[in-house]
Image (cartoon, rainbow, N blue to C red):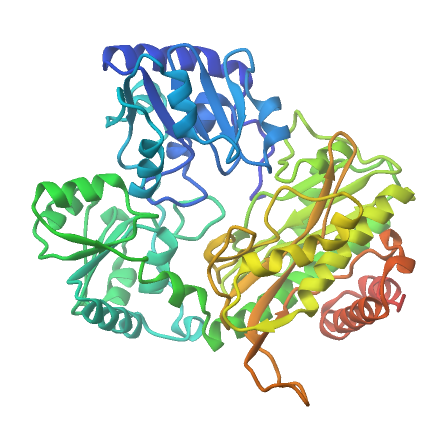
Length: 599
């Protein structure tokens, strides 16, 4: 099994650790310390040694921040985690705060009327993040770079990861790393920059056509890189990660050195050096300034080229999703044959992973499977543990969000399943969520629009019933890379224009606290739409769905669907039969035929 079900943090561990941190703050002359859910690479997922927020507070969500003062410690979380956080932290010592409704800067201003120095680790914060906090601080309250005080009191902190770096085939990438380096070097020269610093792990993996094993569920290597305007790259990572094959793959134009050499290499650069203020650590900016090396602000040069997949990457993604869809169908057929009251959430997770493993191609799961039944389904990012494991009961809904990592693709699919006969409220809410998913799936729109322009379409039918969900409608997805990949998103916050080749999730949902949750998710690829006869001839964009597994018809109120919506669903189910059916066992094929019958 890739997934474990042990508790990684417990609420009672937090208070003594908080006391140790406050003693360290006093010794350092600080009135506060900032503890983000981040590492030096600003990725969403972190290695165990960097999971400081969970170690200190018990909160295990993928985004958050703890602001520790002498008399209060507040854990800032967004809408995905507001129910979860209260069950994971000791609320007698830590206070949940809604983020972004309340931001750290104004919060600090209110809680430090007497002023003082608040420490932060400059490796874990970006200039943009620090600037936003500082802009809200009154005179007398200041942020100061500091050694990481959590690390100082975390006596059994795990060692940094040393996962091997492996080449990723050029046949899947669609371009050599020499071609990628040359393309980005040309853009550097055009901007007048002499070099760019790359700190995002998935950017590093994309640029050099490598993959790693440093971050759970994400096949990326930790490291830093300096891309020069000549196309040469200096890579800084643990030398133990690079074997002979990896070094041969990198070639003569990519040098490698230990992370300790990164600082001296920055000192020796000729400016201007291009930095991304949204991802580069403050430490890098400080180091360049101390060495007198000029810098400019620009987006990580890998971001957009990485997001717009090559033809080879999209072909590979399609193949991975067919294999994964067949595994999901095998699971669904098995699930339907189990009597109500006989399965637990752990049983579900275990069986689904076994179905994926049976393909013979599974390298990892792409995130810990979310299998939330009944009230647990109302936690969008629920992770079952031995302590929380629940038996599925008649009348429950099960939110099952899962994915696989294959050499040729990263998958992410959510299906909501009824246990026994679903109730009318659940069926109505499910159909409203389905209408939103279909709206995005059928959409065509002018080029240049961003996720913020589309997000409301997925919510429209929910809004009619005074319902909504507290997360974005979709995130970017990599190809045998991070399951959450920027910069593209379907979100009211996303201003990045959607462009052909981008892969997104399409996953509206609904969550009724203490009762049930619903989410339906397919992955979609942005493409140029076919012309419409009689139209104006403007370039338009639409989506290709690449996820294939049936949507449970028992939860659908067909009377709420329009004729075009019913036609889309029937067409989608016909595609599931055609594409997945030949890959299934005989019993699962019979099940699929039944489940994909027209409405």
